[in-house]
Each structure stands twice: as C-alpha cells, then as structure tokens.
Amino acid sequence: MAAIADKQPRQNLVIGLGRTGLSLVRHLLARGESVAVVDSRVRPPMLERLNREYPAADWQGAIPDQPPTGCERILLSPGVAADLPLLQQARAQGLEVIGDVELFARHHQAPLVAVTGSNGKSTVVSLIAHLAGGEAAGVFAGGNLGQPALDLLASEPKLCVLELSSFQLESTSSLDARVGVVLNVSEDHLDRHGDMDQYTAAKARLVGQSRTLVLNRDDPRVAAMAGDASSVVWFGAGQPRGETEYGLLEADDGLWLVRGERRLVAADRLPLAGRHNQLNLLAALATLELLGYAMDEVLARLETFSGLPHRMQTVPSRDGRRWINDSKATNLGATLAALAGLDAPVVLIAGGQPKGQDFAPLGPALARSARGLVVIGEAADQLSAVAPTDLPLRRAADMPAAVSAAAEMAHEGDVILLSPACASFDQFRDFAARGQAFEQAVQAREVRA
Image (cartoon, rainbow, N blue to C red; front, side, top):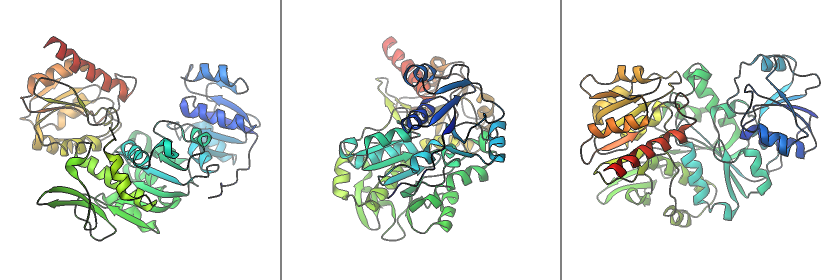
C-alpha cells in the first residue's frame, strides 16, 4: 500500500513528553521539521532524554491556552485531555490536530493489523505477532503496547500489529488496516469519554479504517459495528454459525477451538488460562488466516507463547492455593472475565482508582464464585457496597495487608486473584508496579512459611 501523502507542515507542537511524545519528536526531526514540546508536568519522564538527544527540539514547558505563533500542526500523546483550551483554539483556527498513530498511518508501507477493545488487546497483539513468526520474520508489534507506532517504521517491518486505545483512535482517521479487530466493549475510561456511547464510538472509529473486521459476536456493542463494515469475520464463545466463523466446541474429548466444524486446537493445550483467553486466541487465529498464514505453522508456535506479565499470571507458591496476578485488569470487564474463567472458589483482591465505572455487575459474579473479597484503594467503599451481604469482606491499607487478609480467607485449592477492576495510580506508579507488589508480598509469605 502506498503511504498517504503528508503535506509536511514545518512548525509542529507536540503535547506530552512520555515515550510517545519522544517518538514524535524523533520522527519529525528526522524529516527536517521544526518541533516544540509542551507538557502539563514540570518534569515529564522523557525531558532529560529530550535535552540530551534532541537539542533541536524546543522545550516550552507548560501547555499554553493558545497555539504558539507560527504553529501549523498539533500532535497529541495518548491520554491528553480532549477538552484542553489549546485544542479548542487550534481547531477553531483550522489547525490540524492528530496523534502519533495517524502520523504513522501516513508513512507506513507494510500490511497493518489494528486491535482494539476494552480488554485483551495486549494479549491478542502479542499472540498475533508471535504466531506470525515474531521479529525474526519481520513482524513487529507496538502502539499502546511496547514500542510507539512511529518507532516501528525504522525496522522496515513486513507486518505491523498495533494495539490501539480509544484515546489513540480519537485522533486517527486514515489507518487502512488490512485487518481490524474489535474484541469487546465494557465500561472503561468513562471519566474521559463521558458515557458508554461516546466510548463505543471511539472504538468504532476502527471500522471505517479497516478492510476486513474480526468481531466478537457475543458482545452487542461490538456486533452492532458490523452494520458499517464491508467484510466481517466473527468469533465467539459458542459454536460457529457457519464455516467462516470461529468458536468453541464441547466434544466428548473436551473443549476445542474451531473454525466452522474444523477443529483447530484443544483448549487444554493453550498456554493461557481462562475462557477470555480462549476468545483472545480465536481472534488471533481468525486474523492470521485472513492474512494467509498456514494454520499448522501458526499452531506449532503456540507452544512457545508464554503470555504477558500481570495478565492472569500464576505466582509460584507452595501453600496449596493458586495465586494469580491479573493487575492489568484495570476495568470491571476484565475482572468479570477473569472470574468467569476460573473453576475454583476465589478470594478476590480488588480496588484502586475507579474511572467512573458502575461496579454493580460485580455483585452477582462474586455470589457465583467468590470465597471472599479484599478491597483496597480509593474504590474500596464502592466495591464493598456491591458485594453480597453474606460474603466475607476485608479492607486492606496496602498490598502486603491485602495478601495476608486473602490468605486468611482462602482454603486449600482456592484461587487468590488480584484483579483490581481499577486503575492503579492512587497507590502505585502503574499496573506493573501494583502487580510486582502483589508478587513480592506472596513471595514474602513463602519465605516466612
């Protein structure tokens, strides 16, 4: 595919100096363009690197209310508030406002797979890249996972696989993805988007930018996106409705992942736990078949896929219980999926920054499978309020206390699951730091035992 022409404005303003902001600076300077950079933080994380490696960039400090004189284009890092006065003024003046993924779309040459959804994006992107042969085969993954999209261009990839958040899709309009994948839509980032309709609309922006869609037939909001699509392949938890659909088949010899009536792989061979990960693999397999990969070769690589940290990751323990780190579950949908995929009683550790979610659906899920609930962080009161009244409930001030409380509640053979259903920023740097704190607390118990 020929890259979309870019008119190359000479004066760019980059908002946000994290990894994505730095990738924008690097890309623009390499093209001989002028770059100024602003951030709401006094010392953003990449400021030292900017000053050391890119002295030609103009660090201007705080975000102004008006576009600087001579500014021709504004480029956003993910997560920059859409209602900034600067952006309102820029649009009123007719300035282009885009993100790094849109800039990537104008310059990439390789076939592109784009994956979005509330949960499972990183796992599906990693599965697709790994099962297609990985970097050794010229397959590179990035976007909201790993490398910023623009950094992939230097690798001259044969296939790009991008994870895209709702924030990134808001500022992207010309992807031309060979395959676009929408996994699911559940409450997340409502503090940013306002309501579910606006959040869903942001995800649905991928529909008009993809040649073929892989959609979850079990999710009503995702299924509704098919109305605007020219080509759709479906996946879901039940039996396929036709030979081109992907699903799950309960047979005498166990559960199988299938395409139509064709058995692809037995569920007990999967390296990832949970029903939601079976669906993630179905989406990945559908994508790879659309791209022309041989299924036998794809499935042979499945045995070497080890999963991603902090996503349904078992923490070693000798105490007769299974400890699972699912710290990446930063919204309720992810936690509900984790609970549904486990077949033993669960003591759940949940809480953090709530992000405007309604936690009411957690109550019935806890009633079905939970032995107990330990709540942490800012959302502790909200989570406590939806718990069944007869469910043992503990409140913990920090992660070691949460782990101790969960251990006291759990029986031998139970699962103790950290799946917070919330962001981490009230107590931790990020979800990874939260997951590491959980693992360290579990390991500390092992040492004391």
